[in-house]
Length: 354
Image (cartoon, rainbow, N blue to C red; front, top):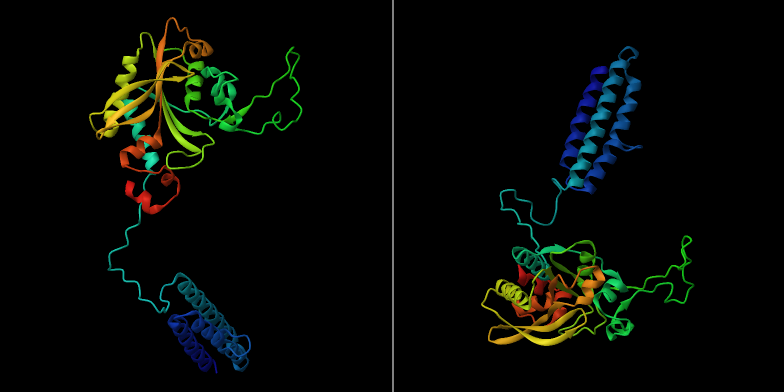
């Protein structure tokens, strides 16, 4: 009886391993599981009943072989399940994977055109000796206005022309209590999204003695209606050079070198008289490119009041500052006619700037 029982187990092992290995989909594997491991009518369950007919002396050997068979069948089921889960050997309606074919090259992205422009501007101004500095986008009125010689009554401080943040004072809440025993009560600072990157120049001059040669690049915010040339959020590059004996000639030379390098052409620069609170004299900067004059931005010599606000002696030091829109120079270079294209996330537009 033992020999017959062992022969039956060997045949069962062969049938079960073949069924599990040949199962091409989940349905076939489930049918094989029920056939061999079903709790009621499975073949392994039926074989277990044959142990009762084996002689008592042979039952240990028969039972050991049965347990080995059960483990083999269960392991074969797990292996088949893992194979189907990974997709290997599964029967599909589509073409099979051919490892001899060339692979699919992954699609690589690239930097946004404005980011490309910013990185190039950093490189160009770095070669002219300017260091890159950064500052917060949420500013107080001192750095955004007062230190830049923009008094309280100036129209540039109008709440309709700035993104003021809702402080407790603006919401009509009580002012904060004074801390300590000083005679003056603590005043809450008015905060706003910076309207210009000139704020960074103030922060640098407050901590750094002359000479100073920096550029600041970043986002600025103004509540403008979005159209072809305006957007509520845009990027600026501002430069500042402070030392002894700096003149408007130095300013014009730096701007001409900058424009010629960026536009890769012999660009001429001209100044038109203008007014900015933080520079005196102030000018609008135009450049001659591709046969016509184009406005670039504003510039001028740093106003003495700005120097006094940061502790510089205007009798000893002079300096110039200039500010340009990053979107503006990027649009001129690539003949983009609408600033809104940079912010639509239209891949068809962005793919042009690889």
